[in-house]
Image (cartoon, rainbow, N blue to C red):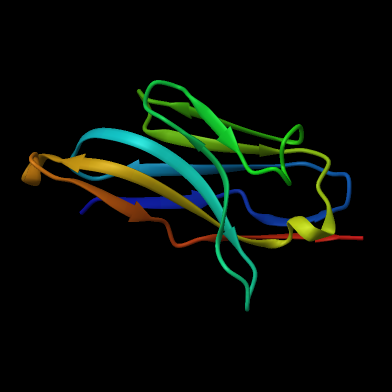
Length: 122
């Protein structure tokens, strides 16, 4: 029942902005670290940004100064604000989270969203 669903992807011109959202739903007891990854066909999936349950943030070098990750624990949401977008940011962006469910409190499992396409044109 636990799932992550991304939204907010689309087509934008270079220099523009997009905000991605990821909603966690289901019988969730708690959420640990949350993260955004991205992947281009034929290339390895890479970490864009992650944020711990305590608010500690890490960014990939290619997005530092341009992207901002944030979370709303009450709403079970994680966001990725993307500014000054470049064509090389084009990828499928995936939400990732460590979640403890009510039906299995002893285990924290890692979940992936279905991905949302971000295309930056030049």
